[in-house]
Length: 119
Image (cartoon, rainbow, N blue to C red; front, side):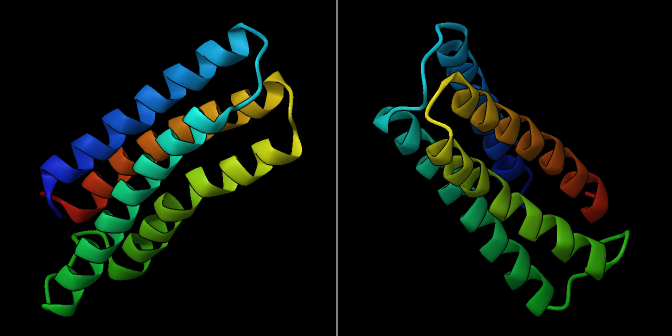
C-alpha cells in the first residue's frame, strides 16, 4: 500500500470528523458543504481501493492475509458514504454526529489497513 495515501485518507477523515462534530456542537444538520467533504474523503477511499486491488493483482501479498485486507478495503470504501446516506435520513444534529462517527471509523480502518499490509 502507499503509506502517503493511507495517511492522507486518515487525516482527511479526521478533518471531516472535526468539521461535522463542530456542526453537531452548533446543533446543525449536515449541509451541502459537508457532502462535498464526504465526496472528497470517499474519493480518497476509492483511490485506495483501486491501488490495493492493483497491488494484489500484481502478486503482492499483505502480511496478515488477502481476505482480511480486502474486507478492510471494502469497509473503508463504504463507511463514509453509508454515514452520509444515514445523515440524509436524520436531518438534525444527529446526522452530523453520524458523519463524524463515520470519519472516526474510516481513520481507524486506515490504521488497521496499514497494519494488515505490513509496510
